[in-house]
Every structure is written in structure tokens, then in C-alpha cells.
Amino acid sequence: MADSKKTLQTLTLGCSKNKVDTEHILPYAESMYEILPEDDMTVHADVLLLNTCGFIGDAKEESVNAILEAVERKKRGEVGQIIVFGCLAQRYAHELPELIPEVDKWLGARDIVSVIKAIGAVPDSKANSTRRLIGASHYAYLKISEGCDRRCSYCAIPFIRGAHKSVPMETLVEEAESLAAKGVKELIIIAQDTTYYGLDLYRRRALAELLEKLSMVKGIEWIRIHYSYPASFPEDVLDQMANNPKVCRYMDIPLQHISDKVLDNMHRNVDGAWTRELIRKMREKVPGVVLRTTMIVGHPGEGVKEFNELLDFVKEARLERLGAFKYSEEEGTFGAENFRDSIPAATKQKRLDKLMSLQSEISLEFNKSRVGSVEKVIVDDFSDGIFVCRSEFESPEVDGEILVKYDSALMQNVEPYSLVGEFMMVRITGADEYDLIAEPVELL
Image 1 (cartoon, rainbow, N blue to C red):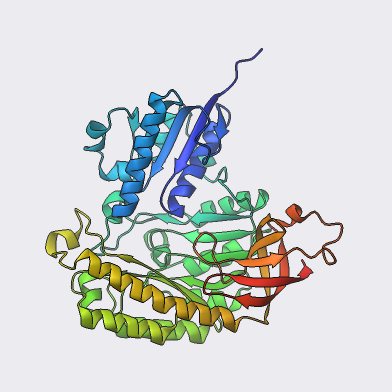
Image 2 (image 1 turned 90 degrees about the vertical axis):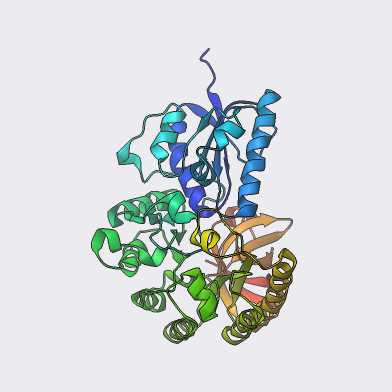
């Protein structure tokens, strides 16, 4: 009887960009290992591959706790070898091996080839578009570049991930075709800065051209854009969004603040007037566009006046989606070395709560405006007689959901679970500040 395969388990922390890195590694392990589910901590793993985040304080703490838990599993005999890589391991490459010697290998975030070799596999440059998806199989993130040339004063990403490097279009199209062949219908475009795409390879901003090429891939029906930097925003992307039916009318664009003083301290290369004009152009060129942003409260230079200016802007712009976090002083950044983090934690929390309370009202207003409309949705899940869905205006994992009750008359002779990953038309019947309620109208 042949020997059974060794087992390998991955644990991916942080953003969707880390998820893509893990998905690129897994195909190399398939012939050598039985791949275990990420979320099952009761199984024995011969190798535990831990992909870490090192962006801000909370994320670093989560990663360290995950490593320590892995060490405890190793002590209990539930894990053999521990390999840690990713942003935290890159950022603290000298400190961590001394602090946690129980980890067998520490590798960074910039060299996936080294991780592939560490699990005993042989890298193949011709296979760089191959992925084993974690979780859902009907949508996938497509990382179009790595690294960042921006120098935002609060951000550690440039010295963790390195300089901006675009992935060639032909490679991305090949990857999209491979994903479509696996059943992926929605691509979510990600990078540290998606609008910077192409400057290094083609000497021009080429995101719009890439969107057009990806939309020609058979099987891909939705393409949405995340992580768009506002400075020098390429307006031909808006033309694609307005005229290409496969490009969702959805834009994730982290604005971070509106005060000129705070934006200058942040080194964002825009001011409040530029930001307002960009929002106006987006609304004008893409009627019905849904905008998602993030804001930072408590950044050095944000006094009461600047925070109130932020609140006024949020009331004025009425951005449909908004998330926020408290400023975290990160060692090695310009902000940590040149500004004093003088705003008390309690003040930051109060500002965060006030901002998010305001946004809840705006989000509720937007969701209520959709009641009665008929929208195309994709089914993400089915449980307890309810389909969990999204329209082009909701991105997975970060936005709300549309909950649709099973309709036996419309869906007779159709196995409900077979509709996961499929599209249907629904009528919105109810709304709260986060989720929507709908009834099915037509299966597509």
C-alpha cells in the first residue's frame, strides 16, 4: 500500500492580496501534500504555512497571536513544521526568529519562490498564472501589481513590499482565463495602487486597457476595482465603467481625509478641492456609481477643526460605503519619525464612533433608496432557506449582503445549492444600514 501524503495547512491573515499569494503557492503543493482546510484547527498538519499581515497594530497583533497559537499546536503534537512568511515576517525579519525560535522557517513577503522551495516543491515560471482558490470558487481576486511607489507618511507597505511592479497584461489575461475555466465569474482587481498599473512596463497608466482585455475573457461577467489612489486618477477608467457592461459601477478609492492640512501631513499628493472634483467627475461620468472609501481619524495634524471638516465632507459627498480606522503610528514610516502621535486613544475612538455613526445614516439612506428596484445579483451562499447574494454594488467580504428567500414556485425542480455562483434577478423589498432583503424575480 502506498504511503499516504503528508498534510499541509495554510493560514492566511490580512488582506486579499495575501490570499492571492497563498493561492499561487498551493498548486505546487498538491502533488506532494493533502491540503487541509484553513479554518479547521483540530486536524494534524505536517506543515503549517502561515501568511502574515504587518500593516498596522491590530493586524500585527493578530499575526503574532496566530504564530504563538501555531507554536502551542506544535508543542501538543498537532503541527510538525511551522513556516511563517508574508508582511510581518518581512518587516521584522531580524527580531522575530530570536523572539519565537520554535518557528522552523521565516520567509518574507517579496519572494514567493522561496516559500515554494521551503515546502519542498520546484517553482515553475510558466505556471505563475495557476491558482488553487481558497473559499468561494465563483469570484477571485486578481493582483495586477506588487509593491508601491507612493510614500504616504503613515504607511509601511513600501518598505515591506518594495517598489511598484506591474504584472504584464498577457500574464493577467492568462490568469483570468485559468480562473474562468475553474468557474470564476467575477474578478476583483487589487494591488497596493491599481491606478498606477502599467507605468513601469508601458510608461503609461494602463488600467483601462487591462479592463478591456479582461472583459473579453469568456466566462467573466463582472469586474470590480479596489484600491484606487485618487492622485492622477486615470479618467479613461471611468469611461470603461460607464460603457463596458462587465465593469461594475463600483469604485473602491481610499481617500483617507479631506482636510488640506491632514492630507499634506499624510503625503497624499492631493488636497480637498481635488478630492471633491474627482468625486464630482465620477458621479457625472458614471451615473449610479457606488463609491467605497476609507478614512483615518486621529492622524497628526487633525484637530477639532480638521475632524469637523471631515464630517462635513462625509455629509456632503454621501459616499455609499465608508470604513475608517484610528491612526496607528508605525515605526519606520515618515509619520513616526517626524510627527508626534499626540491625540489620545480615547479621542481617536470618539471620533471614529462619531464618523461611523454618521456613515450608518448615509448607508441606510442609500439602501432604502433601492427598495422597489430590480437588480441582478450573484449568489454567494445558501443556508436555512436563504440565498446570500450581492449586486454589482457590493464587494465580497467588505460590504453588506442581499438576502433572498427561497421561492419554491420560481425554483421548482432546482436544487438550491446549485444556484451558488449563479446570477438571478431580484426585487429589493427591505433595507437596513448594512444588508438588503429581496425576493427572486427570475433565474438567469
